[in-house]
Image (cartoon, rainbow, N blue to C red):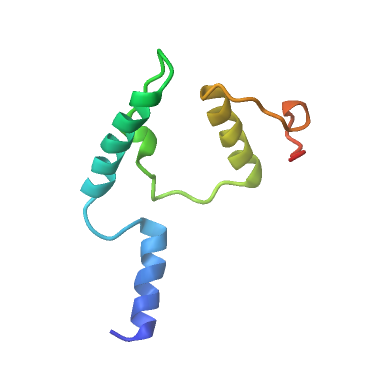
Length: 91
């Protein structure tokens, strides 16, 4: 295999996710959910699907990523210290 072929496979894997069965992702999701649930606040439960990556999607915009971080922060009981919790990043 030459370096061009390796580069093509690496690019393919970045788009489609790791080569091979999804079993590893599922097992990792189960193990991580169990770990997260041992330290979760009462009434909060993680699901394995919360930890299994989705490989067939486009990268999110900066605004979408910030919205996701705010949602996760709120779900974990954290505080948003950006400019009043607005869309401006005061960080």
